[in-house]
Length: 300
Length: 273
Image 1 (cartoon, helix red, strand yellow):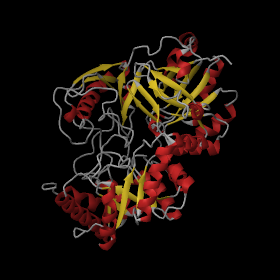
Image 2 (image 1 turned 135 degrees about the vertical axis):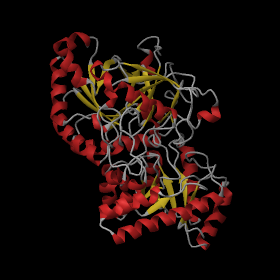
Image 3 (image 1 turned 120 degrees about the vertical axis):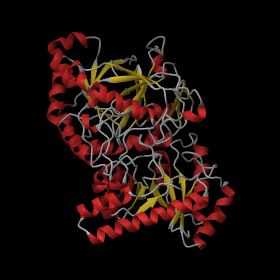
Image 4 (image 1 turned 90 degrees about the vertical axis):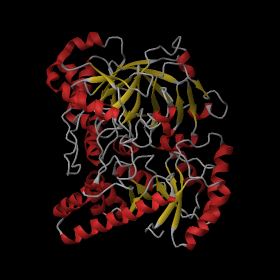
């Protein structure tokens, strides 16, 4: 909080969430809600697994647990599965707000409209969508009174589409070393040596481009992902379009690291505000990008 | 009514080039297929303009084929193009002649609104909304999603073959009635593992000191596809454009009647990833 966070979010192992949950057993979440509120901040819970219990009884138990947390004053649920949106809509009556998780990636205004109809009050955009591309969806959210949120490009994010990636879970393939394999698609997770690449199905009319394209595929498949869309320019475009929240997305990081990074996020927001107040948009964007190029990731 | 399996072929974004190269000879190439998948499954830059889509559809209608149109994840710019495509497809959709497969829920909502008569399928990027799918397991896990998707007009789910006949829960007494209004398609032999917005084959890196300023597509995905032996993965990975695939050439069923158990009334052959 001292580093400048306005909100907290978490997940609990007892409820279906994407990725590894931070270790709060369900019974301990109520005190966490009280503590957060005593500090004057909101607290959200990620229940953003795509897999919602099949049997009706399981779904009912899940809804009862969410209702109990709602009663305890939880501020928002972060949801991705259409099943849970449909169940919550059918049940009705929750006080907590609903955030559309980036695991159900929203790339356009029609997706915004669809989920607004299911009670969504905040859209969390995936970091595979640039700020310029998201502008119409942000405009629609603002018009509808819904909030928008993005992840800090420096501290979080895969380049493959959120919630649609099967690279890091060996459901169809097998890893040589499971631990390393899980990082296969993580951006910047390491340069894997020894990638063997063979061209097939090549267009004879474009053989002149083959070497360059092969090099690109080898680098991107071998080093943890394709070109990043989320960067300082994309952040500035989101900021200029009026995005409301910037999120630090790695729940499993130690608290000290989180605090350092939250402070860095605050500085970045302040810097975007300063250049925007000083220059017209195009010049402000360039100045901001230049400033962020000088940002030193050392120690983060 | 006897169970019948539709045989489809996915030509996808190469359709225009194949029509240009093969012309009337495509009739012979496609004689074993009932329908043809056109459009673009994974990348909005490859989605044809409405007039081109109508031209391609018309070509296959003349060959007596039904047309299935694939659509990818779409930004607002892509949605605009898709809206144009729906306008040309809607009048052509009669007796199952045209179907659209969406890989974006916003696209499904748009299709429902602009072309309610066009049957909708949920594509290979979206099956997690409904199923848990692993090598040899396919389970309906989120039945409440079915109502959500039915409201959008979705009646078909599309998946890839993983080379094995999957164990399902489709015969369970609480699942069977839920699936009665839905059908499945299985694509083979390539299974999509992951898709990026930015391309693996294209889009030159952002110059040092600059920021990403938009997609500059030169259709590098058509230069070549690639097979990759990755040091962390035992199986060979395949790359085409912005998507990584695995290949499962094994036939996953003994006889077509086995597919009825899977509610799979369509098989989609993909000659390339």
